[in-house]
Image 1 (cartoon, one colour):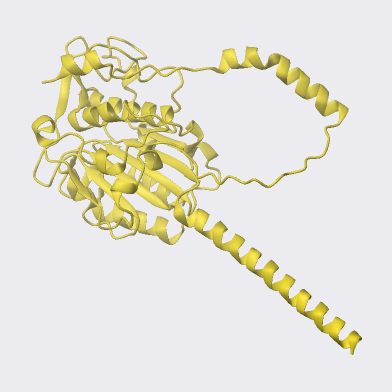
Image 2 (cartoon, rainbow, N blue to C red):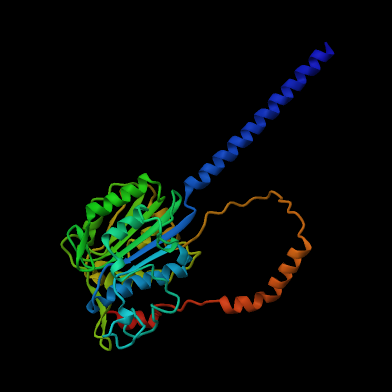
Amino acid sequence: MDVWFINLLISFLLISIGHISFSQVSNADEKFSSFFKSSHTNNWAVLVCTSRFWFNYRHVANVLSFYRSVKRLGIPDSQIILMIADEMACNARNPRPATIYNNAHHHINVYGDDVEVDYRGYEVTVENFIRLLTGRLPPNTPRSKRLLTDEHSNILIYMTGHGGDGFLKFQDAEEITNVELADAFEQMWQKRRYHEIFFMIDTCQAESMFQKFYSPNILAVASSRVGEDSLSHHGDSSIGVYVIDRYTYYALEFLEKINPDSASNMAEFLKVCPKRVCMSTVASRKDLFRRDPKTVPLTDFFGSVRNVELTYTTVDLPPLSAKQNDTNHTLRSNKPQLEEKQMKYYVDQFPEWVFKENEI
């Protein structure tokens, strides 16, 4: 009788332990799943200028200004695809060779010395853009020209150039239509190439470019409604052209006040550039986006802030070998010199005095 009771007790304990272990595993799986479902794990940016010719100088300045802002907020060059259709810095009519400015005060050269252009000149085509988004690139395409996103990637897509009702010009030679763009995004969704997309476009009749979208998790904003033109902000008499567009100017004004730890949300960003200053009506589309823009941090698209889970579990690491200790000692002794060489500082693109003097 005692043996039978002891066996029964042991069986009961084993079942209980198994149930607890299974519950712990299930809870861990649920936490793991919710960790990825709640947000994203990486950020990418695709920044596209589609215009050629000297008089479109401002479009290159637009895209380089956004490039600088997203880098400052934490997205690395390895996760930014920069497409520029013309080399304004090397244009023979540029009185300041190797420079591009986004304001008439020449406060900062946005071309700078740390710009990595991935597609330039005649590489900026509709075909290459669609192939980039959908991942249908030739096998020999280098990593720097690939959008290596997955189902946990948030992607910022910014486009600027000349457009019309339902199309955007590339190189003044071909066009991408709103239907082609919508289908490319659907391919991305089917192939699990994004978690969420924030689509921005600064062109005439820009709203028409997102009217055909039908894929989920896309938030979109456009500089003008159908039937409206998007206007430039101000010109530079020493260069002889306009240097930035209105919507991009005021969007940058907002972004330059943002830090990586900012609490600003996407709903605030969608309100930048009211008609009294933009001279066009900024349009947005939220019906495909599952989250309320008021709850979406701006850095979910413009920065690279990661979702972090804290753990209080102790991790035992093996002791370092003598060789590893020597290596670590050498690295520590060289650290101040390395930090001094690698440290970079971002200068404000538009200081307050620039904003005040450029108001029109």
